[in-house]
Length: 422
Image 1: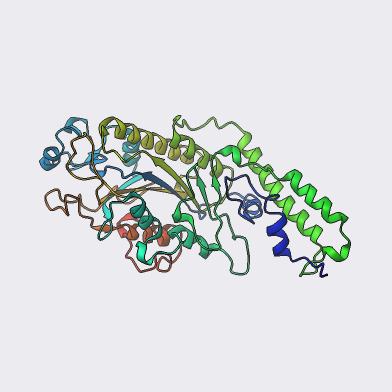
Image 2 (image 1 turned 30 degrees about the horizontal axis):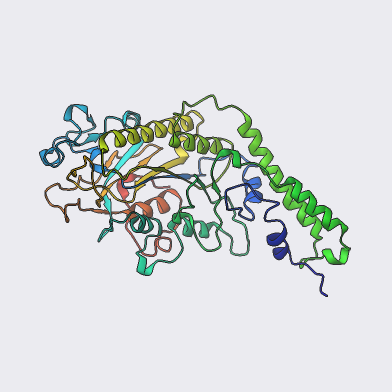
């Protein structure tokens, strides 16, 4: 019998549970070792980070960025339109929902940008299909299992290594890992809460090491002639050191930064703490659900706008106070907007084009693109003029410093008005 043990076989069969974070259903091999390395030094201004906030359900763009001087808006929405006197006006034509005072303050500081009229050709009004299009940049007939950020992560992974050169991405939430983060050969952690970011495998790793010590030396050999026990010890030690560093950093009460007690507020607070702990993860992904407002929209949407606005302002204030504000950019998007006209249930139905949003560092323009026409509609929906993949191309090339063509599966022009050049 051949007793030689392959390093790759052993690590996947024996150590997967022993040297992993408790991160929901996913325990990516190599993530803790990478984490240990990234925590060894302080981030620099060149270590740019992208945070993605997904507004799930189809956010009503017209009641988010309000055309307060357009009478067609008020005619189409006799009950749902935001009164002119309540709109947080930022120019003579459009303004923000009155619950978005936190974001209005970011906009005054030129740290928030509205990209108007974002969508894609032949829009799909299914939540699942439209979200998959946003996540994969492909329609169903040509789609594979990869997402746009997953393909970006693939570019960060050394072809001869099983582990990323850095911690690529992190999803925070109880929902399924978003397709956007998926790619073949890429393992992205998915954390339900900060309490899961703890070392859970110490006893199992010690047991595995004890079992190896009992084996005859001939049975411990590996392909590279490195002792298997040394390999296990090194892997276990790296993971434990990373976890201990994180626990120490996160054990200190976070007294600065007044985060709201809300779902999104808690998620962004965790992201800020991980950033301040020195984690060099490139992309963080969080979601806020509840935007499918078919009925009684006014109260529900107002609450969601307030939650997003307050959490986002607190997040940026926390990073600014720590000197990290210029290296963290936030993209907020939803799978589609809502119909122009309100329905009989005092809500709005699935639509098409809607604004997307960027926030964080100083931005050259706070408003990019024109408000879509309310008289020239496409089957009762707003027409888009900016393909969402152009937003992605700008983020990939001008913020993350990568080539966008392969990631987006086609070439898309950048939005130069954003001024995100490296």
